[in-house]
Length: 232
Image (tube, rainbow, N blue to C red; front, side, top):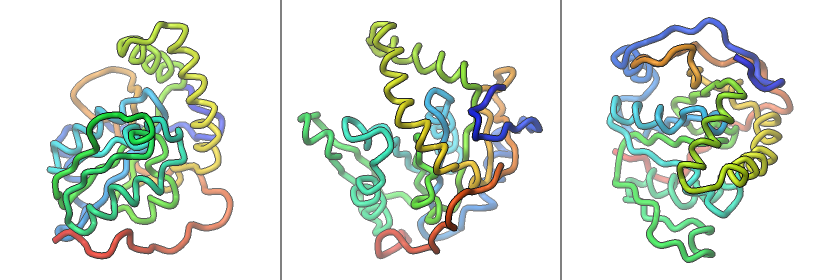
């Protein structure tokens, strides 16, 4: 696997079945009150697939940061996520949120989330310091650089973009994503590392203990609750 220069490569992977994955997550998730799971990683590395699997295993709701970031900013969307999703979720309310980009471009609908005790948020930058200190579990999905790009371009072509436009879109997104992750280093606060581009595909999750590497810059601020009232 060829990772990004600032991200240490994991080599000691353990393929685990769904029951084992659920058990290891359950060991970190509190048995009562609101519980937040963050899944972070590069574009095109299988975060959404992992999020779907984890939600099925632990009975959680799921939010994709791509929906919050739509025509807002590739990485600068944390305030919108907190105010529009996390705060009402923590209060035990249903979420019905129209992010700023949706409003500006008159996109129909909204991000909907029924009241749920456990919430999974997946997306590039989900494990950033300001959110990770509020989470019960942080997962970093590591991926091979070339394979992640190939997958991302193929996905965008399947969504209707011409190949040359899909390549340009990838490069534009990476111009925000790469420096943000290099500075924030979410893998240094991950409880688990998941292989998003494993050497062979099967029904198992390729897992390693976190964190990897060391944080740079000042220490993260102490925990402060998001919202006012936990979900019962």
